Image (tube, rainbow, N blue to C red; front, side, top):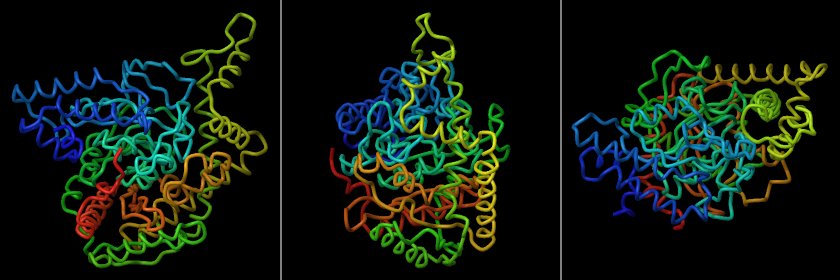
Length: 498
């Protein structure tokens, strides 16, 4: 029974719980047992809240017995990226500097999940403060890709993606600053969506780069992702960047997927040197499949996209150097050297030296330099101008097409340790995803097959204009159905057993 429950989609599991065929407690116990069985190999979770999850599940069962109306995901377990505050549950952002911190409040995303009776299994592993492309920068050890335990699960949200691919949870929440939902989805064969910037509240989401960070849904199917997206999205007065507009009907779009009559743009800048042949083969096949489904394929050029990588790695570190200044050992978190012999400034320096990892220090120093007197205009100011050019290129593209497609990542999952000492090679993993963050558009990654040379998952990225997130689900659901008809079974059935 437990083995069957963990293979169900979130929609299927929710229906069984609502009908009484399965209890929420049974669903939670099945997934907790799976975590206990396999997570020692994967390291997807930093904290498993067994008692809290079972208490939430019991409350869902009690509501059903009382005849109360249940939400569309009531009782379904979820893995939450450890960047969202959770009242009474440790939140570390993957960093030693927050080890043992227990937040006194819930993030808006956390609260909305609880209000929707989604069962929170625990907090997932991540690159420290979401800075990374591989989940190797976590202070608590790397997460492994369930497809091949010697390879990375993507970053920074590798723990959330790995929990899905390993059937430890049917739903997960990630965050996407430069691709940290979509890139892990691509290399683990799962679905991940970066909503329009401001479409999901950032209140209680520990900040990395405030003008880029965006929380979003992760799942194994397009419909499950849409259902989760609809739970967490919407205006929040606690977040000044939250958009005060209705959320598009993404669930209807996912249920009625169609590419018929859609104009689909293919950007020439998203191919060439550095792209794995198998990734491009699967991408080209996906474009042809869209054509067969009735879409019009339009070739596009967006020249500024080639400048997205350097622009991002000036803007994001600049903002992180400001955001991480709050970790000063004075208010919360780690404190080192407070023995009466050091000044406050020395305690702050010693704490940051001990608490921050190498990648965080690298980005803080880079950002501080870019913002310094005499360099601001040359670096940060210039990067913001490039950001405007990227936004304009998207605007021009969306005058011609409804959505843009590309590979999500240039390669499949690379071996753990391969790029640790080569930051530039690591940063190139996000080259396809960065433009959407800089422009604030919505974007999705769906699995589009396995690369023939290594048998690992390949992701297809779909990008839509801001507040047109429903287009992602419309096209994504159409492709997902076509892929499954062609393969005869869901992609994840091919993942190696743990």
